[in-house]
Image 1: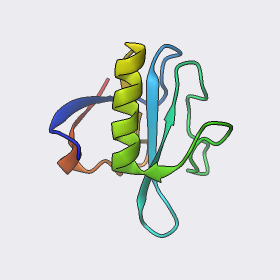
Image 2 (image 1 turned 90 degrees about the vertical axis):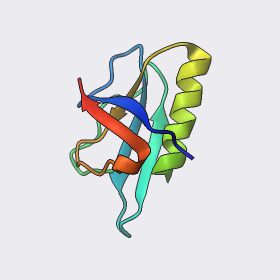
Image 3 (image 1 turned 120 degrees about the vertical axis):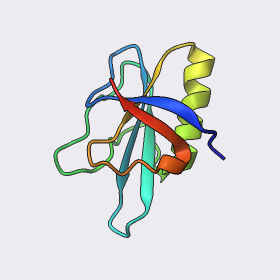
Length: 97
């Protein structure tokens, strides 16, 4: 599914970036949401994923793949928002930026 790429992580995305917000749901599954440039950038304090029109929660690896495709299509940077440290090293390297 995911390659062994290098991903950038920050607390909030810049307005020009595609952001993939990831967290763990109540059942312990890793989930994510892709937020397009200019969308909601930070996770709420409760740990819930951003919600709204066009934002769909998916398994985290699928959300990351979707984010990669969206960033490539828009020719814009991709950033991972992972404030709770749920990143799986099997997905690649996550570097704070």
